[in-house]
Image (tube, rainbow over all chains, first blue to last red; front, side, top):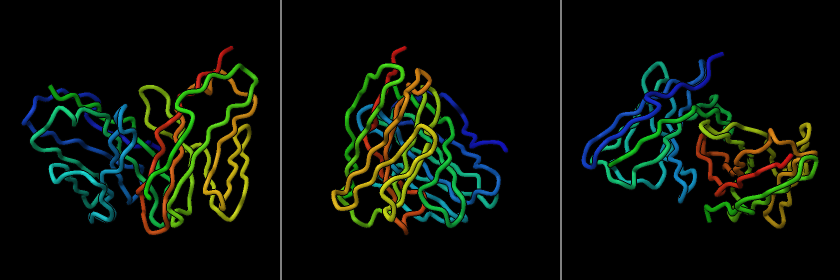
Length: 113
Length: 113
């Protein structure tokens, strides 16, 4: 069974630009969550999507948004990039009705210059 | 009240020794406590998890001890091996929180041969 796939793995952007990251969950998983990982703040929850609806949201500004498609694939978008948005963005999928048991992808490493 | 505090930040253990990582939480609504293991360049992977109705759970060399009254839980790695060298994160989740995990800050474990 294929794991969680994230693309792109690495990307470099400049301040003010926007970026879209993609995530394909494990087959059969309908929940997709996004996390930001930085050395200073650790792993922080961004949002979760389930059946194309945002089910939970973390404490991030509105520049961070996401969506989920009918095939459970998800994208997250960050607009008006800031230097502090440099981070590893992790996507995780999970089974419906099972909370806390997440399967993470390898992440998308975003560098903002 | 949403925080999970983890210690130590880093840990060096000799091969064959016991590694112990501690976590404390405040929110009594949490009812699922997983530990994740992360190797460099990889996403976190679920290692072992416990619910508050039991005080201990063991899987191979890995044991979680849970103290509900103290709101603390810990990971014990018996017979630590160099291959266990990784960053370990404790986390907490609530029943209605879906894919939202609150992570500790992480412990970088180094097992010396």
